Length: 128
Image 1 (cartoon, rainbow, N blue to C red):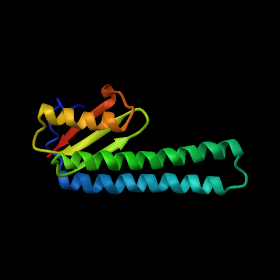
Image 2: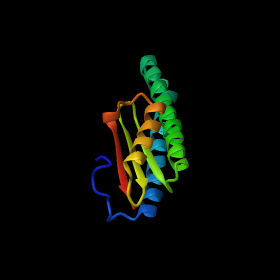
Image 3: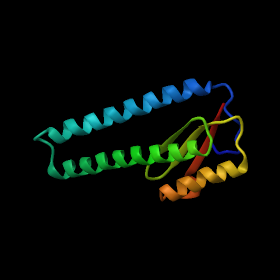
């Protein structure tokens, strides 16, 4: 979905953002807990432990990057937004009554400055 698609009008914006934040945090907490438990196990191969440490670092970087992008977008005057970042894609869900082309450009510029994600892998979804 990109900024040219119609706004998702049947979703309550405040409820969406509240639920999305809780769900994202719960998912991250579960991932981190699983990694911690596996790394604490004496039976796990050292190479696998190194991979898990790398994965934990990726999760921490994603959390930091998402928060920074969200704050920069909110600083542009948007009431709320959620950013989902991984090494290949960035998805932004923004609370708005309608995006102007220059606002889409501002958001994409922020993402391009903060990540190495190509512009074609950035999606922006509007929620009222």
